[in-house]
Image (cartoon, rainbow, N blue to C red; front, side, top):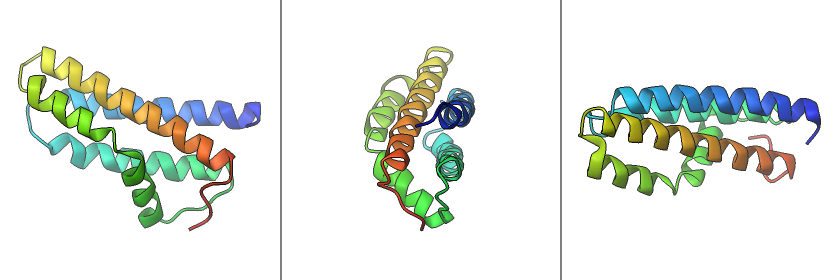
Length: 121
């Protein structure tokens, strides 16, 4: 990954993670509602990361990439059920979890783009 690609990836991933964290924290007490907003943020992140590596993805291909990378959502769902309903604490945990998962997913997907594992689709 060139330094320019890394800079662009950092901007895209951190932006998506911040947005996901804000949505996760703001909607912590509404079960599953945050996922309806976070997944489109992650899809946009994947499409943008593809552009950095000159890979053009359709929305459907980006959604499939997000779904395949989201096995960690089980942990997020568990944290939301256990503490998500508690005001303030639940919001903070949900925000951190959403941001962390999005950040990790972004770097994992960027690595796949870099290695040529994700092609135009």
